[in-house]
Length: 487
Image (cartoon, rainbow, N blue to C red; front, top):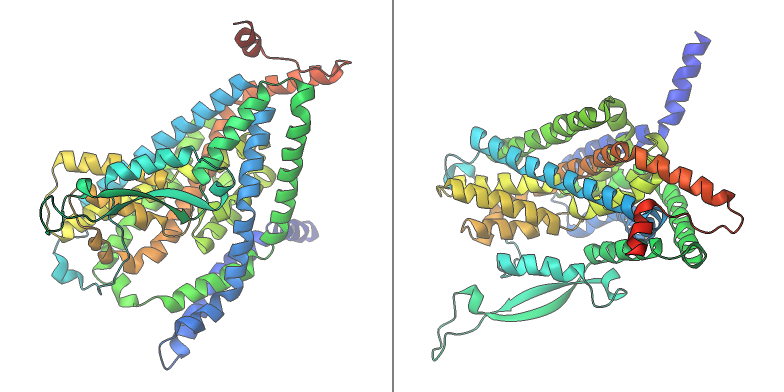
């Protein structure tokens, strides 16, 4: 009996942070309902701000660590690997991202076509109209902005701003009538607030690859700087993570208070909500774990349970980027994933691998078409799937970024941007669930890529050990590097 108690105590101590974080999520829901029900008058925005204040501070601290951790981790991981292994890991990760995102879109389309949550028309939906700020943009411009942001003109500026295209209305030639064709409007570039994560990732990968092509004595000082900064960022992150139960509690409770109406969720819109939820659950907790088990021959249950802290943080913050430090900690410390893989794969995954967002956008577009009673051909559905895949890559890992890229998907099937108002009432909650799917997809992908790269990683360790035994400490190159140099 004492041994049993001792094991229980060890289990609780080991999972204490996860337990209190999950309790913070549950406590936030309960506290939100209590505060919401106890108020005789509707809560003002200022009152809600007071409730969410501590949660906002926690979110700010997490976001503060994103860029240092993201850039330093990628440079350290890529710079430590030899070039041939970096290519293999990168290709495996990208292959995984493309495959899982495509599966997420296909799965979302199947769910919305089978359930048909929008059948019945807008009159039966009874959704309150909400004014949404939108900008005029074409699908081509959105894709071109994605490519532009891959190559920022100023790396310092990329930490604060990202580029986007704005279309300025014009009049028809020799007329005062406004031009209705967006492709004939004036094109203007503007800088909008928000880190250009895609450009920073590209810069970090290129810098890491460059370091692998340098001699050991030349690359080691800079690599040590990035390695030390990455380790320091992880230590600071561990301090911040212990505040997550309190931060998440107040973030969730403020959102529960801010929620406009429960009747909307449990009413007709509830079918749409459940359709997205079923798709996200099947993708994140059935399909992806099955892929993990297929490739690694290991049980995914323990792997997923060890990611509980990251899952709770993803739900509380609704941000893949804000959850990145926690996800990397869970992968390396709890699941034992090689840091050379996790610090390479996870930052890139948090930027471009958005399975949950892709699934949600596919479901939402077809749902809105059903509500508007707009028939969709097979070609339209195919266009939605392709556009949703690309739109999810362009969605920054920040709260409700999916609403922005949703405009691009709606434009594909000729639906107006204003139709987003049909789903915005429940988007704040779905955003949290799709962020969980995004984070879980990144983590399982890191586990799969590490398993597939095990032989190469072991060979890297052998090369490093051989280099350490050499008197002059010169770098021992792999066969691929010698062949590349000789050419």
